[in-house]
Image 1 (cartoon, rainbow, N blue to C red):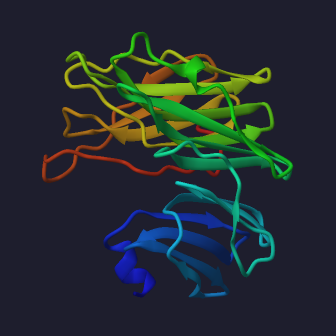
Image 2: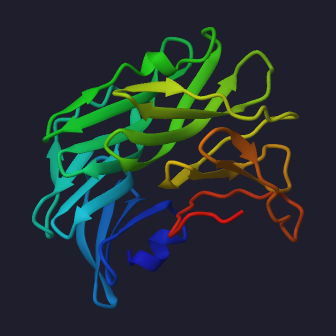
Length: 259
């Protein structure tokens, strides 16, 4: 399987390293496909039958982390090794961010007896531990919480986003969490009416400029939210030409918004 055909059928996560290099991980069939971009060509580094991977980030060309149903680390620029990260059984990490060489965060979800619970794991110098995800839980046991992505602009300034699904017929709401002052807390965002909405990705430029995107479950416009340092607000997005509904899966920022 080449990278192009894999991308057409699976979710691809890419981490850029400098101007002309990158790493991509993708779940492909029964295993994972890891590719590396050097100069102008992609080459397959590993095609294994190991755990599925959902996201990747790199501190530099020889320090990359990939997460999914397990955690893998590339410390040489040429090979990946499994890390004992204690991902709960049937749990998965959907996003990863490393604000420092000795600090990384992974976010996702883990099953409970009746639903699922937001999962947060922290790496401090190569040792991964679960960080009290129950503190982000929705009110009541009928909710299913999932974190889909995380972005950090410092070791004490991270945001994670996802969804909170109510089993009692209430609309799905975006789940927003902030890491600050050495702890995670849930942040109240704008209420999404109708069938609700969810957030798939988040990007942070600085403390006063954060963007999160995903689908509005009533469509057709995608859901776009902006944080200005004080509050999150919904921003009107473009309407898809086919009016069948829009879904944004990724976002990145290269500067502070001027709006």
